Length: 75
Length: 360
Image (spheres, each protein chain N blue to C red):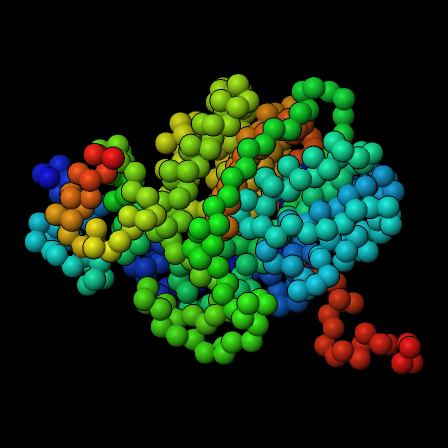
C-alpha cells in the first residue's frame, strides 16, 4: 500500500491520496490521471486493468485501487 | 505514397482563453499536439485524397489507364452516398474498368485498406491500385469539446500499390476487431439509426456539452484497449511473420496521442528512434496518420533506400491491425498543403441535379 501511495503521489502530487475517498465522484482525478494510474499499475504490479474494470468505484480511493490490484493479481 | 493537408493551421495555444492555460498545457503534455490542420467548410477527404493522388500519379508518371482499383478508407465521406471513391475516380479521370468503393473505418483504415487492396490484387488481374485514406474529423467535433477539438488534424493520403513477382515485396497483415466497444468512439446521431435528432447540446458527465451529432470518445476505455491489446497484437504479428523488431526500419503507428504511443512503445519494446511522432506538427490525423508520419520522416530522404515498415492502426470500432511492407524512400513524398475544393460537388439546391435536363 505504501508503494501504491508513492505511485499515486508521483502522478498527482497535489492530492491527499491517503484520505480522499471520492477521487472520481468529486472530480479530483480526470481521465488523464486515471490512464496514468492504469499504466503505472501495470508497470509496478504487472496487472492489466481491462475495460470492464473501469468502474469509478475502483478508483475513488487509494484503498479501492489497492483492492483492485489485489483482485487482478489473483486472476 | 503522398500526403495532402489543408493549409489552415490551428494550435492548442489558441484555445487558452476558452479552456484556460493550465488545461491547455496539460493537454499538450499528454497528447504532444502543438499544431494541426483544419479543412475549410466545403473541403473534404475526397479533395485531400485527390490532391495526394495527383501528386503521386504525376511524380511516378503513372498511366491512369493502368489503375485497376481505387479504394477510399475513411469515416468522413464526401456524401452519405455515393462512395467518395467515385468522386475521386471522376476527378482523376480513371478508367471505367477501375473498381471503386469505400471502406468505413477510422483509426485502422490504412492497415485494413492495404490488406483489402492487396488481397483483391492477388485475386484479379489488377496490377496497380490506389488506396486513399483520410478524415476531416474536425467537422464532427463540438468546438467546446476540449478532449477532441485541439487533438485532431484533417488529412488525405494516397498509396500506390503495385503487383510484383519479388518475394521481398510481400505484404503481411494481422487485423482484429471488437464490436463490444462500438460505443467507446461514436457519432450517435445523423445515421439511419437516429437520422434527425435535435441539435440541442446537453451537458455530459465528463463536463463537456455535446449534441448527438458530435464525436464522442470514452477516453479511458480507449486507452485501456490500446495500451494492452496493441502491444499484444504486435507481439503476435512478430510471431506470425517469424520476424523481430530488428527486421524493421520504421514503426509507423497511428498517432493517437503521445502518452498512448509512449506506453505502446514501452510495452511492445519498440525502439523509439524508429517510431516517428508527428503529433506535434499535425495532431491526430486519424487512420491516415501512419502514412503522414512516413511522409514526414522520409519525404525529403535522398538516399533512395529500401526500408521495411511496420504500420499499425488502432481505435474506433474497436478495430486494430498491423501490416508490414517494403518501400523505397524515393517513393515517399513530402507532405503538401492544398486548399482546393471540388466546386462542382457543392450542391445547394436539388434542382442543380436536373440542370440542363429539362425535366428528363
